[in-house]
Image (cartoon, rainbow, N blue to C red; front, top):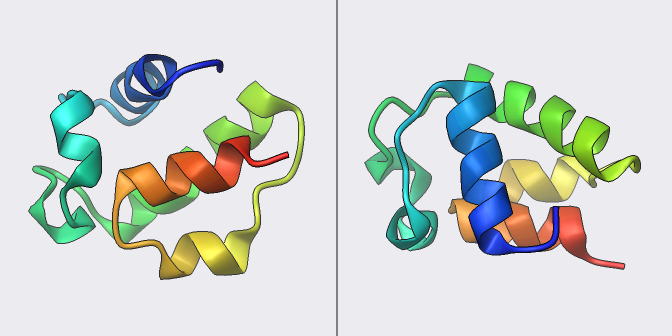
Length: 75
């Protein structure tokens, strides 16, 4: 995953949502179809995709997909 577009594609593919790049800045409560179960599914998909752990506690505090993307791609 090398770009926000790749991340959006992963979200759509793995979670069955229809989001675009503009949606990543929205509060998670404003993302159509979002729920807490999807957060765990996304975390698992991100770890599989990146090959490394994503900081779970920080992901739980994230208020939008952009922050989750940043946490998943930080070095």
